[in-house]
Image 1 (cartoon, rainbow, N blue to C red):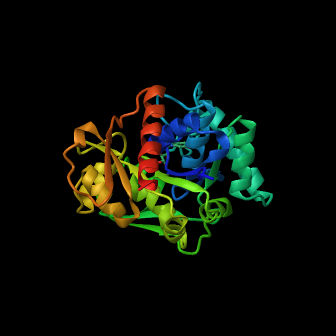
Image 2 (image 1 turned 30 degrees about the vertical axis):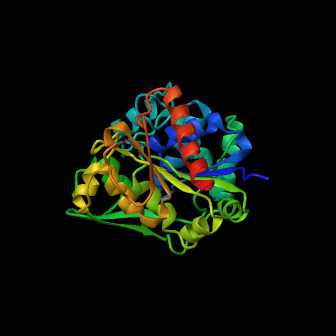
Image 3 (image 1 turned 90 degrees about the vertical axis):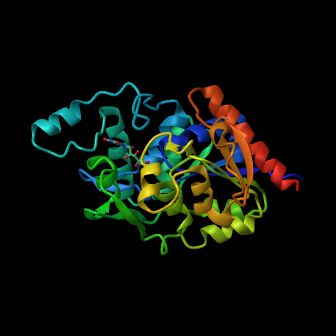
Length: 314
Ligand code: FO1
């Protein structure tokens, strides 16, 4: 019998677009979306899981099309009021979005795991596919920059990615246990592809790969690993990927992304703008990787699955 499961590794905004495409071309029980939690933090007394939430909102059709994060049809009374009071308003929690953070925090304090909370919220919001945080254990991305060591959201949101980055660490990653369903899937012998969504390799995908046992489990699954480049023609579609690559001494290009993933990759999907990429140690597929419409998301999902299929039948 042919293998059924697709495991997609994703960060927030960019990755969620492909995750949505995959969710629309695959049966719900054949897709497992693994969300980065290195960006998670505690803010205003709440447990915030930005990438889990972006994936949740996107897959539920509740995402904010203007920001890419947070909820659609948002209002900002809470933020305005907290600003008036001299409180912390640099990280924008909309009124509707706030409910999710309050409810997650309440349940975590009662002893539920992040995966249990995520699974129940996804079910309540009508999401059929499984979205799992990479771990229920605490992992925190930190950056060494010209402004010293900084927590991820401080760098990303408060300082708008301005500091020059020299190094990243994922505190807790080597001790964190990858979420049980991910390991069970990878060990099941039923995985037909591991897809690395077009997310920032350093801040979204490497925290997932940094957990002990994760890279090995992907290798042992024997499934083809296909990444979609988050860089098009030397530019990041959104966010600091290209800037960071330059600062870390890497070539800010699709080839630079492939080099970073190294021998983990079997296939690499790049945009037509990068058709001249040359040899990178993974089989190249050229496609339209800029996803502006739902049709683009579905088409890229099919192209990526086809690339994995072609690698599996070698
Ligand atoms: N990103 C911003 O650039 N500014 C914000 O104020 C902001 C608030 C926010 C609230 C909830 C949430 O789930 C995400 C939010 N994000 C915000 C996005 C997020 O912090 C980053 O995009 C990711 O962590 C990077 O993947």
